[in-house]
Image 1 (cartoon, each protein chain N blue to C red):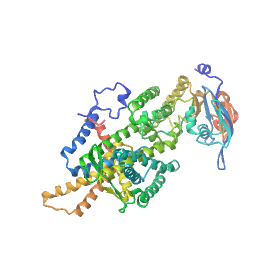
Image 2: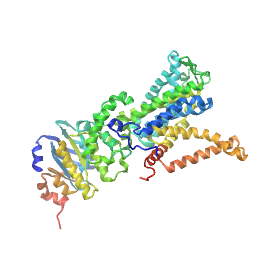
Image 3: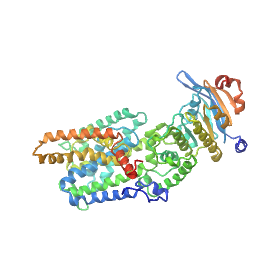
Image 4: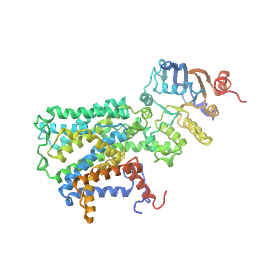
Length: 362
Length: 265
């Protein structure tokens, strides 16, 4: 009953083209934003460090991949590699120029990832679908090899890993061992919210439409005057920018102490890809749903399953719990994909549509 | 109506195709075909299956590169077109098999047709609010005019993949119109339609021609429609031109009757 648009009259095209045309949706977003901003008041460090920060980082990477795969229709398995470019670029930049604020370097490192993404996106003019995926796979392995073998990238550390130096933001420790999760959470949150807003702006405008046109029917898109190569390369650039920023955030504001090259391996690419498939291809919101399901749900189950069994006097071992967790997650993924192959975002949309009509079926 | 159209028509030639030859490996699709399209007319291209009609359209808007021959569009002569160049110079087109952007709404499909007219770049698109949104609203108005014109207001926000075939064809016409083309190429706009849908589509084609003054080149198999709508007709057979002229002349041409029209029994 609450979710009705009756009585909300649109008086101009601007109102009709708003991202959230319905007042209840706007209220919902405001509540969510207020909740995540106020979260550190009630949440403990574990909640911030192990749940919220990683969730936001993964969601950002998933948005990046979704711009490329979901919106432009270009399959990519290079996400891990592009995230790595962001992380290593940020490391090199901040060790070369320590006096520049780390937040600036995190954003700039995204530009390096964008550049690398454009180079590996060049084959996309000629090849599509699974073949392009194989080409991006090559970028994944090549970049990972670089992270391991090019010692310059990690400043010839004996450990062969990035060691995150201590950096400050307005006098607060932001990276390194002394940084508190609360400070890091707020910085991650700000960056992710800002970039989400930008992604949403892009996909709702001319550029987003060009991407979707290329995805749905590239021949017709060309005929509308959309040039395929620049459009696809822009998608690669923007997507890799997001992945690069996510990679830099991951190492500097989530791990906060350091990371080895194998963080950015092929599994990371699959992990992000599975998020956007479950969450919904071609949806910014879907990236958050996917990240929540793939990343947060296992953690939640880790608490929920023992808690549910405890009243019956049953105790569950750590390794059994791990197996149960995998079984439940696997079953849920299959369930959701059967119910709605277009992902959770579509499910959400259908739900909202039903709610608007309720109690009538149509 | 014919008189009205004749008055509007000039003898300016908007597109001239000269001696175009196209082959795929050993297969000759088009052999030395020449014809022209005058500004403001409805020009039909007919012929049996495999005659090279669609290939001809593909040559005109740059999907295929002819081996020989020249194409002159609005005074500029070239041997080959590129699709986006053709688009920016004012050639729009619909496809025989609907080639809409299936995952997008009717409105978004039509807005894609405005792409070439929109100029705010990445920097403005990032903020959206401000100049990019102002541009968006301005083009939305044009899109809404087209939606009005084609009477598809009720499906404005429906993803086109869910629409019935007849409406998809109409949306495709709308998307082409959004480009405000000088020359509109229609590849079998009425294929697979019932009588009512055909009448609607015919009306839209005539209205586009009258209201916007768009020159139209049309491929169609429904001879009744072709004879009624078009000012002049080119007939192709096995990649060669066998007739060219006004409907009544073409209709009584013996070669056309033998090759394509046949006789009533």
